[in-house]
Length: 72
Image (cartoon, rainbow, N blue to C red; front, top):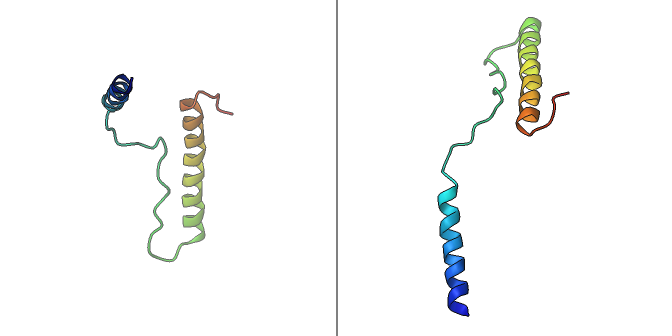
């Protein structure tokens, strides 16, 4: 009884390894804006914030779509 059980465990473990290929995870979202190494003007802050905000909203829609939910 121990031999078939051990064989079943070995086959299950080796079978699972071949089903999941090694793929680098990718994010559906754009990374935040890189802040320059200088003093920011009011316009810079507004532009960078606006870009990040728009990308965050797009990212939320992509993630919801990928998860099977309807974007709100």
